[in-house]
Image (cartoon, rainbow, N blue to C red):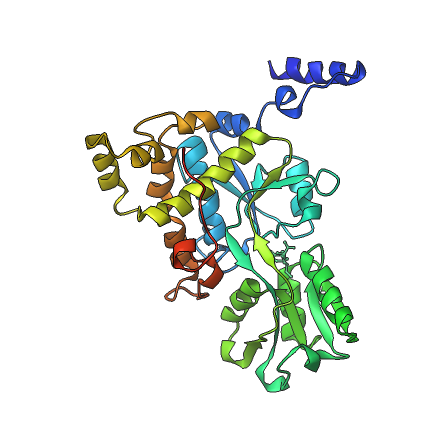
Length: 348
Ligand SMILES: N[C@@H](CCC(=O)N[C@@H](CS)C(=O)NCC(=O)O)C(=O)O
């Protein structure tokens, strides 16, 4: 069936027809289901986001997002194959199909999202970040101006590269970028004193600092050079997969809005089943209606997701909360009712 449809596509192209991608190709979501496993592209090097622990397990907010997708798509959060990718490799890995999707501290921007650019499609933002600068406390540099004529370590193939240039050019400040292929090299370059500062998403700076022998010896400057909204991404033109990803993220946010947690999900489900008047809750948890089916998922996909990972706030707290190794105040990453920007459209 699949080959036939692809054949039709080439024929349609030859005849100047207008078959759309979704008519032509099988959605990657169906492939994931057939395979009964999700191949998730991650970084693997950022504590709090995606980090390969000494026991061989990946941990972090990006990893939990992979688990939430797997719970929704194949009914099991453990059916994930993690593929560590460098910043420079990540988009090719999506294009070639080496991974089903990215959950890898990737910034949404127009060039990456458009068909004339990287041709990706982004799910809702899971972490609002901004680019920052980290320096040694004893350097006596306390803002961007203190970096005039200094070297700055930066990762290539990132938004960071362009932003640092834009920021220094805007204030006519000369500096020397020292570019590295991946985060480990950036950190090494900075720790070994090859540059006065290291620049990256502020979350990555916080994560890198947490792994230093003496984190207190490094400061993250107040200057925020850019907006870095980080979101999962998949190949553009596959609406079935991108819709499913979008609503899994919204389910995490909506569950937090409604106070539905990993601990109380079964109680909420029972309540929904027993009370036919609780229409929105019944639809959300798949007791009534066919919202899951519309996405190509089970109607109770939200229950599976929340049982697996808890809601967005629980994921955040686990990896970036005050008791975690990389505590980052929620600020913008709160839900909208608490002054942040995360909000879910209705599950109707
Ligand atoms: N959010 C930015 C930067 C993300 C990024 O990947 N940064 C570099 C470090 S400067 C990196 O390589 N990070 C982690 C890794 O290599 O695993 C983007 O999407 O371009």
